[in-house]
Structure formats: C-alpha cells, structure tokens
Image (cartoon, one colour):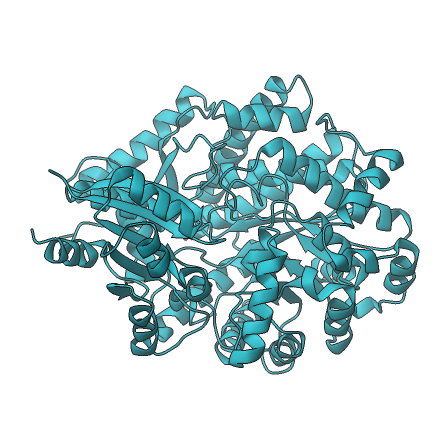
Amino acid sequence: MELKNKKWSDEQFYKVREEVLNQWPTGKEIDFQEAADYLKKVPEHKNFSLKLKKAKEEGITLAQPRAGVALVDAHIELLTYLQDEGGADLLPSTIDSYTRQNRYNECEVGIKESEKAGRSLLNGFPGVNHGVKGCRKVFEAVNLPLQARHGTPDARLLTEIIHASGWTSNEGGGISYNIPYAKSVSLEKTILDWQYCDRVAGIYEEMGIKINREPFGPLTGTLVPPCISNSVAIIEGLLAAEQGVKNITLGYGQCGNLIQDVAAIRALVEQAEEYFKAYGYNDIELTTVFHQWMGGFPADESKAFGVISWGSATAALAGATKVIVKTPHEAVGIPTKEANAMGIKATKQTLNLLRGQRLPMSKELEAEIALIKAETKCILDKVFEVGNGDLAVGTVKAFEQGILDIPFAPSKFNAGVILPARDNNGAVRILNAGNIPFTKDILDFHRSLLEERGRYEGRDVAFQMVVDDIFAVGKGVLVGRPENK
Amino acid sequence: MKNKLVLGVIGADCHAVGNKILYHAFTEAGFQVENIGVLSSQEDFINAAIETNADAIIVSSLYGHGEIDCRGLREKCDEAGLKGILLYAGGNLVVGKQEWSDVEKRFLDMGFNRAYPPGTSPQTTINDLKKDLGW
C-alpha cells in the first residue's frame, strides 16, 4: 500500500482488517457491530474522552498511573487498588513487552509461568492473548475510564481488541511507537499501521462513540528537546485527525526546568491548534498530558517522592489536562501496587494544593515559548517541504535526512546524530543539531547557553556533559556538574 | 591485544540509553566492543560472540523479563562451542522490587559469572572484567 496522509477508504481498511484479525485466535472474537453496541453502553464516567473534556473545562489536572500484570484477576486487583486506595482519576493497562513485539507465543509462556509462580513474570498485561473476553472482564471490574499504554509498533490487533472491550483510549503513534521502541521496523510500515489504529478510532467516532487517542509524547524520555517532541506530537496529531480521530491528547515529558517545561506545554497547545486549523481539522478536542520525569530516578524512595512532586507541580502550573505518575520504585523497575498507589497520592496531593494556579506569564516564559515555536516551525516546514506537501511521506524522508532526529533512540531509521545537554539553568539545549534545520540564530543561541555552562564548570562543551546529565537526577541533581562544582 | 566484549539488550527490550553509555564506557576503558544493541535474542549474542571471538558477553535487561530471556543462555553457549565464556547480566533483571541477593543467586544458578543490580556504575563492571580477564 502506498503511504499517503489520506483517510483510508472502507475498501482499503476492511481488506487489511481481515488479515489483522487473523494474527492471533482472539482476533476472531471481534464483531464490529457488537463492539459498537457494547461501547455505546459505556457510561459517561467511564469514557476517556468525556472525562478529559470535563477536566479541561474545569481547568484541573487528572492523575493516571501506569500498571499491568500478566493475569486477568491479578490485573483487576491491581487496578482496583489504584482506583480505590491510590485515588487515580484515569486507569491504564500497561501492555507487556512481548505483546509489543507481537510475540504472542512468548506471552503464553509468561502467562503460564506467572500462574505457576504466583507472581507476574511479564512486565504488563498481555491484552491480545486475553482477548476481548479478558479485556472486558477488566473493564467491567473497574469504575474509571481505561486506556491501553504500550509501545507497540504494530498495534492493530491490540487496538481492535481493547476498543471492542470498552477501553476508550489508546496510546501510541507511527513515530512515537517506532523510533523509541523498535530497532528495524520501517517508518512506512508503522505509519500505515497506526493509520489503521487511528481509522479504527475514526470509524467508532463516526458511529457516535467517543474514542481518545494519545500520541506518546516523551519519545526516549532522555533529554529530548521540547521542539523535537512537539514536532512529533503535532505530526501524529495531524495524521490521526486525517483518519477521523476527534479527541486527541498530545504529550510532553518533563525535562526539569520549570520555565522550559511550562513553555513546552503552552507552545504545544497553541501550535497544535494552529496546525489543526490550517489543515482544516476544525472540530478537534485537544487536551494535553504531562509525563513526570522519565529518566533515571533516585533509588531512595523519599528522594523519588521529591521528583514525583516536582513533576506534579510543573504539570499543574503548566495547566496540563493529565499527568502520568511515577512511583517510588522507579529506580528498580516495576512497582508493587502499594508503591504505585503512593506515587498517585503524592501526585494528587501536589495537584490539589496547586489547583487553579498557573505559572504567570513573564519575559522568560514568553521568550521560551517563542523559541520552542520557532524551532518547531523550522522542523515542520521542512517536513512538509521534503514530502511535497504530504505529511506522511515527509515524515519518512525527514527521518532519512536527519531533519527529524530523536536523541538516544534505538531505531536504525533514526539518524541519531543529535546530542542534547543542559544549560546552566537545567533547560535542555542542543549540543549537536546534526541535520535538524534550525536557523543560524537558533543554533548560535543554543551554543552560547552551553558555552556559558562550560565556563561555569571550567570544562569544554562535550559528550561528557551529556553523560553526566543523564545520570544527574538519579544522583539527586538536575544538571550533571563535575564533582568540584 | 584488546579483550573483546559482546554487548546488548536481551529479549523484547528496547531500552537504548544505558546501552549507548555502556558502549562508550567499555570502549574508553580499552575493550573492543561489539554492540548488538537492543531487542537482541540469545542467538544474536552467541553469533556475535563466535564471529568476534569474544571473551565475554554482557547482557543488559531493563524491562523485567530478564529472568525468562536469560534462561538457557549458558547451555546454548556451551553447545555453540563457547565453553567458559564470561557471562555477565545487569539492569532491572526481574519484575518488581525483590531482594537483590535472591535475584543474584537466581542468575548465578543460571550460569552467569556475575549479575548486577540497577544503578551499577559502568566502572564496577569494568573493574570486574579486568579482574576476571586477568589484567
């Protein structure tokens, strides 16, 4: 199939659908009409889109954890605990890594071993293996909207199953679930596969069923400059809108400098709205998600709560519609349900204290917003240019040419030349822009900020700064300084 | 002659950041590193070790499935003619916060020479490598 940013025809969609539903036996359980009837009966308070829309109108920030285990009953126990004890506003089902690679046979092993061991040997919920039956059981057992959160380059079957099960939101996108999550899957393939996922949501939307879609904002979660993640978010938002998606949540991962983080969210909303309008998508309900710090965490649990609360405060001050919550076990991997609930409680306490407050506009904030928007525009203009106006084609070409380049990504289709580092105030700047098409003014500005840090630290601007920055938060500071500073 | 290492992230795991840093650190420390990157199978590790005539295989796992993914690697190395090759594993090797001594024992019982908890500095592994390789 030729890649184009164009709404799939029914003929195209249903032809591919036949193949998708045959990828694993549980695919055959899905009947579109029956699924639509089921979704129409989802009560308002369990619909993701409606809950986000209400939060946006009320100006509050919702808290959502990550969570998933191998077995249905244990997963229900986990989610119920996060709902009742943790006070989560929205629920996830984090999908395990074998499912993300479509290795359903290995999921079967993981499910059986987990039954035997009495603990989860999988790092998430294998939604495809449990099928509509298992996923509906989970949905019916909880009292909040449910979303699949994963990292699946080809999530077509998973998407079909979760939506048919009453889960009204799906995270991911053709770029954001490829470049940070795969090694050798082509972008043509993942953009097509995510057009399919978006189209599923679009078809339900046309039947009057509200489905939320959320491109994965933080990408590699490691020193990603705001203009890079905002560019990807806007592209994936536009690609989703073309397939008929109406309720879109664009995301951003906390970098750590308050002004930069608030500016990133404000720039994202303003610019995404401009692009949606400019390309004729006039009825998009846009919300935002702020991810608490995605990099290395301190192992000490009290220190981890400090990081969690800092992210929560920033999310509130930025006015994000929801925040994705970390836990005090982040440094050692997947948390217990108790630790997960503690993360939500710390988050909600901070959100409640800051309810209604926004970071007021200042000269610094205004300048940072303007900078991020200018950088993002440089990138997006070039993406459209190399695609001869077609955003999907342009995205593939932009990655080939390093116009889009995501730091520390595993994909061989990513140039991987870009190197970010923090400036003296902890904002993420660009040490090596590679082929990202910034103006000379922007490049010089980044360079001067890093030079300033270098002078303060008495060392050259070099790769060691990047390494130090990656480890810094785990060690308790934002900027990775040499030991004597 | 430089000692040769095979470095990679095993299984369906795509955590790339630590892998890039380890590559950088091991190379700086004077090893010749064949980095097979993320999403690597046991076979990928073994094939790379045979091709490069490696002295050690360093397995990273960050996502919790390490326990399943690493099983049988020692036996497969033996079958492939890599008897006695050094096998290290490190990262977030299991699902959840578990007692490290239990996790370490599980990996040593599987035939790994050393296992490392989360947050281990690359320097620790470099010192152990030098010791085990008789520098």
